[in-house]
Picture 1 (cartoon, rainbow, N blue to C red):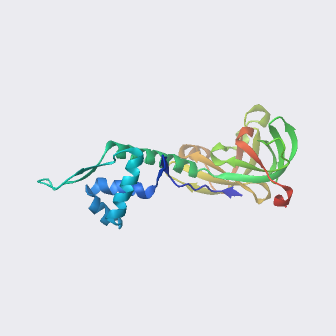
Picture 2 (picture 1 turned 180 degrees about the horizontal axis):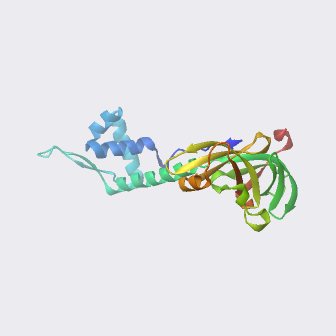
Picture 3 (picture 1 turned 90 degrees about the horizontal axis):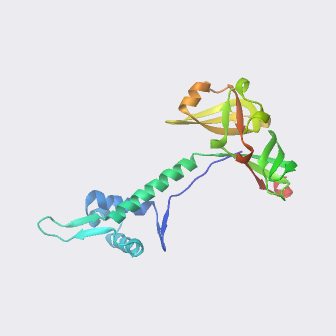
Length: 234
């Protein structure tokens, strides 16, 4: 099973939470230099837009600099505080976008052996060495796609000679190619799959394509066991 993540970008300042519509409001004011024009373009009432600005300013200070009419016609500009809010929101959004690209492969199993925090979990794809809570017996093991390393099966080092203690051989089922990163779905035993993220250069070097045999490896510390009760597992 593969779990996709979805996130919504928000910034909290005191009692005020800034969301995408607030950033769109600031963008429109900056673009048109007018709160009235921004409200019209966004399809919002001027009163509501103005009230939202007041709410935000009570938390962070002035975000608009308004000039009354005259020879220049007046208008509204954003303050440096507003620009910094936009930059922070964009940075946070970029960070979350990166996280959202990471999927988790999930394998259900039973703890067979334990050494401290690490346990061997018997799963549908075989034994996985993972970090497992001390009181857990039935668990779901999650593995992030950015923690999976793909190698040619003939060039993969022995598990006891590398930190990549978990190693499985499978067949590439699907490639989702992006601008710089490719998401690779590998079919393992028992019709289960695991996903990995690789760079474009790694994909080219390995000659990745559907149907190719590939080894998928990951560290024990990259596999996390989550306790489940036997009734849920059944």
